[in-house]
Length: 401
Ligand code: MN
Ligand code: MN
Image 1: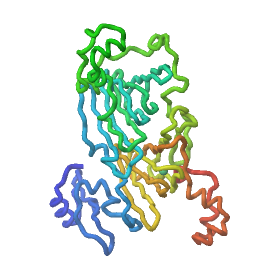
Image 2 (image 1 turned 180 degrees about the vertical axis):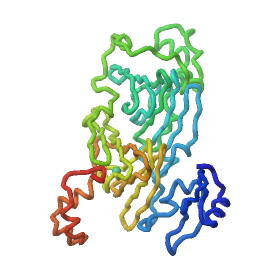
Image 3 (image 1 turned 90 degrees about the horizontal axis):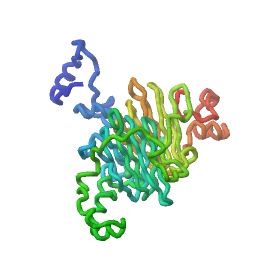
Image 4 (image 1 turned 90 degrees about the vertical axis):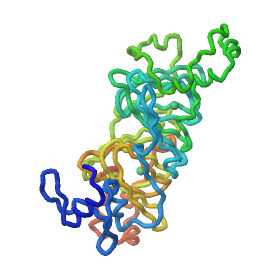
């Protein structure tokens, strides 16, 4: 939609309608921050992307913290081989346990050999990449990953990522520490720069004259290098492979399917090395909704890949708040808070639920009621026979089921 100044919107709205591109008059095209008897008028362009913040459902109440931050609002670090941006505790204050990075590597672009204190989990959003790692037992790992593939590097394990033909890659990184900073990792060029040449000479058993000309760390980090050829056994000749692979094909998993969408759950049960992060990839069709539920183990950190959605979060003590989401947004649900995610658009919503945990777990409101003695449920809610007999004992993550 074109940018329309707030004054124009007000004058158009006051005249009773908004002219569409075809010249027809669309009634009530501009939502106003009002409910009958409450509110007033004053919508900005940005407000219209956040209709449930602008006009909160009347069930919203209290002061839940901000539970959304968009990568589009984060600082973009541009480098010769690509770009990177991050949503950490600094951007999304409520997230103490998880930070996210969105990175693009152009073809040949390398995220420099490095390591860090946090564990790193990744989801490939676009293109293909080659990833490498070596573990503490001296075993190595090299693999090519594509859209929908995951990787997991345990804390302290050195690794690299490189964009492959034809157009590099883009991916989401998730770290098990909200305070993680992608700009403060242990870079290989940095260590060489900060180590006397004589020490490097002794370490590698060669003359000191071979050292002292290492590129400045600011010239690496994300830099362009020759695109490697196809993956071959000779790439890892003479080495022992890690016993539990650091990558996983999430899309090869058989999803849980309902009439309105799918969910693929990947935790250490199917991706054994991923002991710090569990995840679910959720697809919700138009009109569908990720059902009312909560997680009994930990907070939920979300990344919206495509589509439009709203999430309502219930925080006990009469508190509830609703947020709108689109591609590139991060969402957050504090531990044990009840929530739903509803597709509010005309296309499929795809998002990731991510947990700092070795296992995935959720509790379904629907299933809870179905498996509790009906007289007891009736005594609480007085739902009536029609609702009670429709309760399903099986779990239905996406509804209508
Ligand atoms: Mn890393
Ligand atoms: Mn959830």
